[in-house]
Length: 353
Image 1: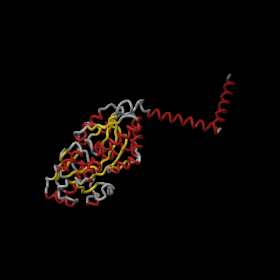
Image 2: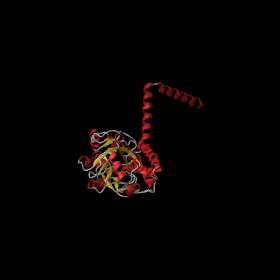
Image 3: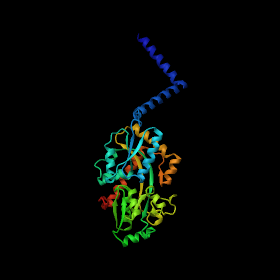
Image 4: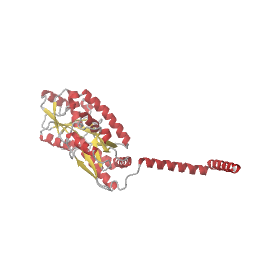
């Protein structure tokens, strides 16, 4: 019996060596192993739940009023996702409390992928510092994709005798506290950009908060505001119509849409920092498979030449392909940036200062 077992064992070893030395068999084994690894990876990431996103409308929440830069990019992406997926993506504007109302709504939503959030990276980073929300935004929101970057235009009401940066600084210093600017929330560059501007120029300009930059632009046109820092998407139409007068752009190079508007560096204020980035988030805990599916779709949307051209016409630069991890890294850098900003500008922590 022992002899028989030993012979069978020797035969198995010999057969196994023959299989391993056979190129065809070796190739088959490698393919099988690769298939097993792929299956394991799929099992780990999970599959998109049946019916998503067709089970119900997907709501994309924007914390600003309709017509602003955040709202515009949200609607562009929502329309494209609706056409590509066969589902229904709709934008809802939930304004107030510098975006905190929208943040609270998304943070408390079921983590099923049917509630998304479009916001600036700075808003996600700054909100906990300003204590406008009582939770960690990095845990409350799951990064999906970084979508675009928009430069800001510093504009003045056309009634003012101001045509360039030098004239603006001279006028502001001659009239301390008599100029005001509109801001669309204390986490937006329309606010932080003007705080930076005041510090760099030694001027005293008062803040008037609004629920969205689009509304502030209308008051600037009417003369109720004197200054407005707005994204080119928000104020661009009014600049083209000569209803607002541009002083400078925060872009690193002159805009193709506004070639006559100097950059901050050209105007003499290279340290001025005011651009806005828009990203897509889901509620924290949303299945990884849904996050990756949305990331893939929006990446493809943003690389469409027609979409790139349309965004460029609005003054917005579409971001190259990026992952949820890339966005998470960006948020970490924003936190470092704004922590330093508020440490150096403690008065800016006082809402309305």
